[in-house]
Image: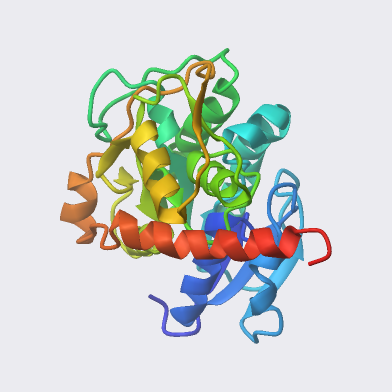
Length: 321
């Protein structure tokens, strides 16, 4: 790490993961430049950082040229719609930020001689034919399906990152993020945990897609951010899975949240979306071996912390609140 105060740029820094990453980098004594165009991010996620002497917010679309004055040590590219509800509503923006945005961020890394970390995703594996998913698996993705805009944007981002690494010698890192949850997710995020919690707290039916037998492995945000930081400071340019391998079905998750909230809501079933993965579980052998990383927060603790956040958000959004 540089002896001076390192400068880190976080694209998508007002989003769920990006804002937590800004917090961690500031705690590690970095100067942080947060860039976001706020199409899915929210300044409420970083409001507590305004006025911090090492924090700067820049309202900017990273698919356009990125100008940063002075030296930059680290660039963490987290700009992208990340939930199905977002990338189905914003398909072209999703493709552009994965392609043009990654290109512009890599160009900045090249110009500044900065280390570059791209936020990839377990979605690069698509609807996987091997289980659990290890980094050597190439995936099973439908490029023309409705989810393809996100899956292929991230696959392209990885390819562009490796091209800059091999051709230009840029120091790069690729993190494949599996399902993550925690405070600062949006009420209308569309992903399972925000949906179940919002529905339960409002007394609405909990909506499970398909028969609920499809699985996910959910990681609490603090654990994920620790994995990201460890990868950033590591010396590996190979992709690394970061997520919690504790797998559960969507029906099981709905029942856990139903019990946690004490809700009388019913569980109802709706048709499974197109190309929805049937299984999802990270093989984290590489993260454990190379980064000394493993998740520490168990699901009961993580869900309890997350529920408290959603409870406050729902109270704040009630008419007359």
